[in-house]
Length: 424
Image 1: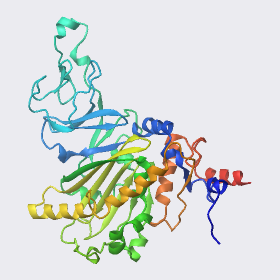
Image 2 (image 1 turned 30 degrees about the vertical axis):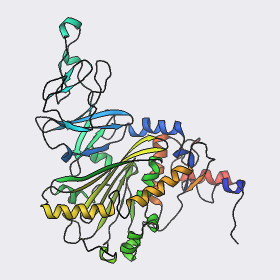
Image 3 (image 1 turned 90 degrees about the vertical axis):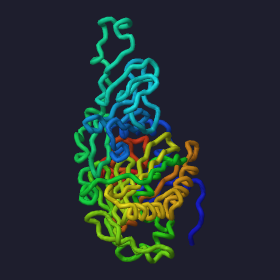
Image 4 (image 1 turned 120 degrees about the horizontal axis):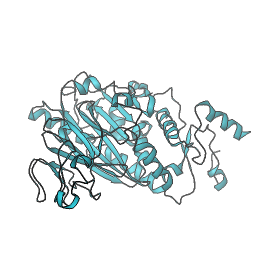
């Protein structure tokens, strides 16, 4: 007969191999978090925004990756570039607004220039320094404008118009295509057929570790949380979908037809879809370390996670449709998107409540726990192979064993061998 456990039983490792559970400290430890920023987020390609959010020459957006402030600009040549949002003079943040245009001048500087408000140094859309106040008086001939341009970052517009940035000049992944390792191919025909446009944006700061939000995107076992998903999706095709792993920690989830009309007040969405996507179908891509693309029938959702601390993450949610939409089609896409993924949609708030509960129980002073990733269902969506795949990659980048982060990472079968040796 099943019973509760005492402390010794509660803290005992589960009857799994070490690739089937993780130590809760990887969600709460401050040193591990700082190491993640350095070893992972400063080296990965991150889709920071969509090009439709800066459609005109001299438009900009600002973001942060691993605490580094970044500004993306669209130049007169319409090319999107990314720079550290840092003045080379005294390290001041140049642009503090989240978005806008440099077309008009600022109180400190001229039109079509980025201007540091502190001392009025100015830079063009290619990051070149074009003006230093009282340059000759202060620096004589000892400093030239060409010596103090902005720090340009690797930047690429790829996969339906998303703007990707990498902080590491020496990354082994020269392009986003190399980084994605084939994981984006299932949606590229739908997203690259014609231009996309962001029609919805909101963000939330959640008191949990960023990996917990990744986990809830990564597996569908938690659809028992979502009444809407159970009503519209639980059928043989739903349970047969595969979780497929790719190099660099990415996964994607196969499609099936969602029966929206099974939910009271909902209708089929077959009349509005994306190019090459069968009506009412649903694909998902979860990219390492913290990006999710979710194409569900008539709208695309993108989650971007920005870790703020071991127990805090900012999530930016974008909804996208086709730029060619007429007014009626766009309104339908917005309603379809927001009824599921908006801040008051059928699903999103339930996910946020779930991960908030996890965050509350995994605070830094909590005793160690084992978080189970041991479900096996033939790599279908209620399998936890997607999370095992993610944490294997996490362990490789961090050189920490997820099941015991004090130990170095062990590749593949060595994990199981170590578990057997420990048991004997």
